Amino acid sequence: RQEQYRRLREVPSVTRDGVAIELQLNAGLLVDLSHLHETGAEGIGLFRTEIQFMVAERMPSTAEQQKLYRTVLDAAGGASVTFRTLDIGGDKILPYMRAVEEENPALGWRAIRIGLDRPGLLRSQIRALLKAAAGRRLKVMFPMVATVDEFARAKALAERERAYLERHGHALPTQIELGVMVEVPSLLFQIDEIARAADFLSVGSNDLMQFLFAADRENRQVAHRFDSLSVPALRALRVVARHAEAAGCPVTVCGEIGGRPLDAMALIALGFRRFSMSPASIGPVKAMLLALDAGAVAKAVTSALDLKGDDATLRPVLAAFAARH
Ligand code: PEP
Ligand code: MG
Image 1: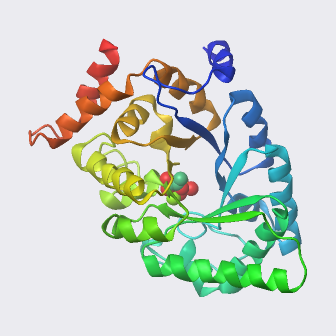
Image 2 (image 1 turned 60 degrees about the vertical axis):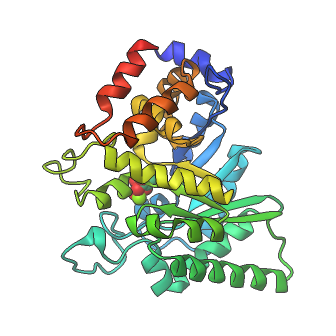
């Protein structure tokens, strides 16, 4: 199997009916970058910057952050890298930061919320990213955004850092793209506004599903109570795909579901064309899409989603489709 997947590395990632699908990698450590070459992935679709903070014994300095980001960009060569700003809090606690006692950490003070409330931390990170990407393209996305205003504030903060560096004669990135992770359901109801405001979107389906179904992703008793291929899950994802396309806003799925072949098939049916996943998922997903008729699966999924049957999940429909083709 592994050998078979390795052979797919050089094969263009295109469905049987000619739809190009971009496959990227999720990463967080330097060692993950070796997988870029091994898998033939087109870039890093999600670089989890909090990993550096989680393995450190004290807060990494701006210079240390900059060094890591530069190394990542160098290792990627010209391939695209999407950095996600610190996603701490919730289940990701920094040992050297004062812990905040919370009843519901997943719904608590985390990610962009910390970034906006403690702007020193986010500013230091943005500055490190801007400096590391001098002379190249920089893509940065913000986690756990719940309102358009939060993104506007994060964007303003990034712009202030850019202007500061420019004023002080620093070399800047050739292009700066700022994106939003879609992982809080409130964004589904302001999807047009956020798609217009952002340079790109990235669906964090791990969190989006947890919040959509109110089922803690870390709690084994409830994490599997819902199906990512159920009608409500797919309808929610379809909203993102449709509105992002209408707004001309590129969208990626970077949560785990994109790395599961049957789910990825459903996502392609909904109109998603870019995925970011763990290295081990690239081979299986690529094998699936090479054999896929995207037009046919889109028809099957659309009619099943629009039909008001009592089938709560499309899993059997998709499994049957996969078996037939
Ligand atoms: C997600 O929520 O789907 C995601 C990609 O981010 P993380 O798993 O790091 O929360
Ligand atoms: Mg997340």
